[in-house]
Length: 79
Image 1 (cartoon, rainbow, N blue to C red):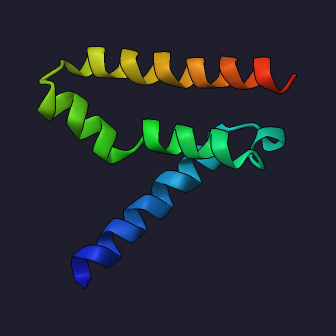
Image 2: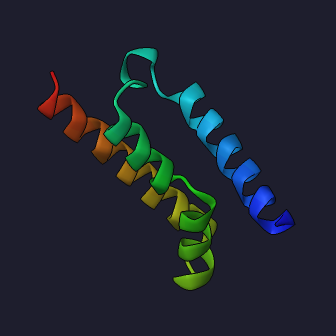
């Protein structure tokens, strides 16, 4: 139970951080915000760093590329 509560708190903090980064007019786009949430999650980071054994800079570049791609794709679909 404690582990589950810790994970839920962590996810809520991550989502709050994403809400602070995503412009207000895009926050109501559940698909976009959800995709960014998954991209920038702790699980994603540990998979890149530990699972793929990438350097911190390489993992950051992947996060940035993916996030920019999501925002670009979203702006093309919803001008």
